[in-house]
Length: 359
Image (cartoon, rainbow, N blue to C red; front, side, top):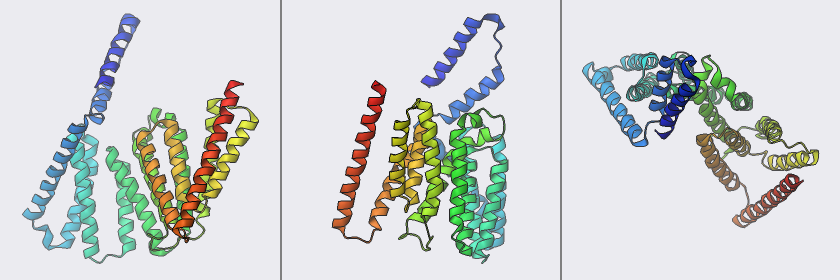
């Protein structure tokens, strides 16, 4: 609320300083302020609203199911699930209230659940089920105006593609999938201003696309890296590390140019340290992917993504050492030596940067 009051006061000050010639689109301003108030409601209000929306939509779905006795026929359940999905997506185009946004998101989730359960009961082939969910995700992205629905749709599309890869056992496609997601992530983060200022559909898609690509990247890299928890083996995991390493090096170059670091020796030292760290972790692309997410989110000050990156790198580092076929003593020694190496790298790089600043 303090930020909102500051915005209103700033507008009044501009009006006063510019005089009668100042023209303001009051309608668009009111819409943006209303959107801001909806998206930045207090935590307690959001929790109560989400709970109310969930209970309301659940009651609605249960009432219709029991009234028309849909549970007696799986085809009816499938049809009802499809109707819920279409209705929730199209209703999002007219939503202006947080409570209504919550209701239609929950209805969408109920529709997805009913389609999933009924499809399994009707013994529909897994490949066709994944294809149906792919179509649902594409439909939601094209027609939904709700950021949460778009996020769900992105995860559905990615999940369907990964499921198809698993079904047909073309595991090498995981690497191709990673390359595509990394490319998309680089475009989204390095062109944030272009996305936000664009009048195109991408300006509305940006927030969901940002968090969605982060989650999709970490999930896909987790499948490749965490061997003990995944029922199938993706060979040559270092292949997925290559596009990640290239993206990190390119981003480091962008970051150094922005910081005004022009001395060749300093830049070479940064590149060398970065390559050492990345090459040492190349057999676990999930760790490199987490580093990429951390750097990008730190660069644009995206707190949610940064927290996800911190949690993911902790998890993937722990899983990496857990899966090593060595004794606990050797693993402990490796952790200790790794800590010394990275601590030394940090000390030398910090000392070098401080020296350059004095010069």
